[in-house]
Image (cartoon, rainbow, N blue to C red; front, side, top):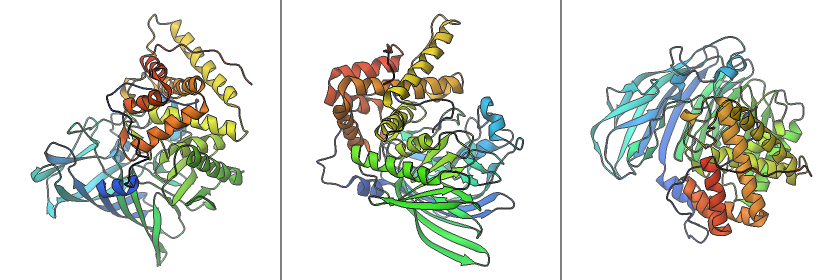
Length: 495
């Protein structure tokens, strides 16, 4: 996610997985991901007057771990918007920006949950009632599958956030129950953090139908299969394969521009952007830049959407939200587009290792801005270094032992610390690596990382191994010192 406050980029903790290059592999990574992915079918309708989304959702789940399970668990992020939630969905710094019309609340309410056609006594649990636990009638062993069906209503808050409505748009991000990630044979039921993006999800396949009033224009993850009109309403059907999430943005004010990059149709939905053509151009330019330098974008469509959002932007597969009224549309669009590769195609644990996608996406933004003649790389990085050193100097005036290491989301004291360490320091990490080895080796390392980890959830050690494998152990040392907070920041002059 692109934050308004700062600059962004990458670094992290070690783990033990090697970088595996798939270039010579005969199989198609996307076809394999589709084959292995769980399958979601969602049939929903949106009431624009009541601001309620009603849905029936079916999930065909296969146990791909080595352990057996007696239940299946889902994150229900929509429940975090309720009035009695322990954690507010935004940090205090953003409350006024998120709620321009005053505090508002929403939630998710379940009518029924069935397992293989039989109703079950589900429970809503978790640290902040944000986990749906579905009991199974019999143990689910490795490679076995089960079908879970649920009906629910999502009531939206009046908030400029991932999930909510405003006067201009309806954001439907993280609206549906999504399977908890299984790691080392157990569900990772991490709580919702209002700092960063508290999401970890495997790629899956989606068939989503949405019915709503005909005055809405719909931007969506996936490909539009069919649209049917009926008595003032339109029913849209979308499919998306091998994606980590599914999101919509709706508005009765949208205008739309379209272009093509390679095999991908690029859409820009907007209502207030005074330079929409330039915004579309940035989306296309960044897509083309990363197609060339990292790997080809495999999806048929990519939509950039101007909407009301309290941060700078938010990434979803094949769709990104860009904050209306932003002073840096171009930078935000480039950053969120970079996330289509790093978060979308190459996943990571965004809770434990946010630097892996945020930091890298920001540094790629700076490289693109330099390549496209907008802002030199040295000027962008000079701003990063000044911000980071000023922050550390202030802390050193108050504390004797300042912890500058990368952390998981729950360990950051506040949003500012998260931004400075994850985004700004992360940017400096990747810049340090880039300057140490040169552009050619940097891109080769990144391409190896992409080829070996696409459609998976990558570990920090994979990234480090890919860079050190091409560039030598010096790169592992650079990564490790930044991860541990022992880095030495070099000087830079604007060129």
